[in-house]
Image (cartoon, rainbow, N blue to C red):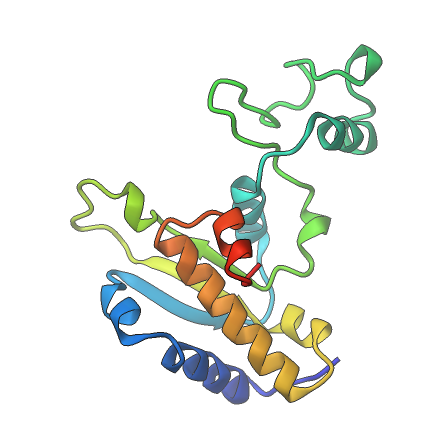
Amino acid sequence: MYAMTEEEFERAIDEALRSIPAEFLEALENVVIVAQDEPDAYQLERAAENDAEWSEEELAAWLDETQGGAAEGGEWDETDGEDAFDEDEGEGTPMPEDDYDDLLGLYDGIPLTERDEYDFCPPDVITVFKGPHERLCETREEMVEEIRKTVVHEIGHYFGMDEDDIQRMGYA
């Protein structure tokens, strides 16, 4: 574990932003980047909502663990878990909050690729979490690099990239 002061952490975020090509930074509109110690309940919920779709096996295992079991035979039944799965939209099941103690960053907003009429909207927010970075990293160098990866990862979401796109670029 490597600990940073708030000022050091914010400087590392600034350093990460300076490493991004100017044309990408200039394309950021109505977005704010902030540092926070730990994710709060709202942010954990947003991370779970944005998580990639779960496989049938992952869904059945999660239901068994958290809901007292899936429907007969481990198959998904729409009565299991109130908001757990929207089959029509193909959205995945929100993961339990415990799976997000290591949430490094979060993009909360409308990706550039999904904006139509976007006038007079509050800014999108990219939050970089200090505590999870500290628990993950052993040295200052590791931490600065992980912060850079997190900032690039969340800016990727702003530009409409999904987790697979970001992973292919090496920022997942």
